[in-house]
Image (tube, rainbow, N blue to C red; front, side, top):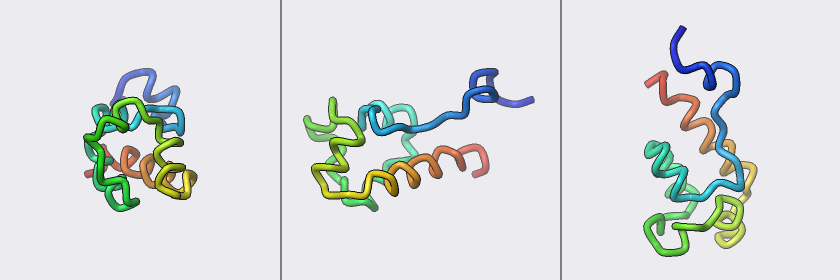
Length: 80
């Protein structure tokens, strides 16, 4: 079996309440997803504490689609 026990029992998932910066630190491969959705200012002071939900709201984005795309990016990390 590959991966640690937690990953096998509880699938990894990016949620709306996580900070943008924490997600970028944990999963650098999601940077292009944020950029594709128009969230290019990922190093600005606001992104440090801003949640994905508040960032999506501020940029007028579809939160569900953003989360879907982010989770797809981390899901495929082992398949690359």
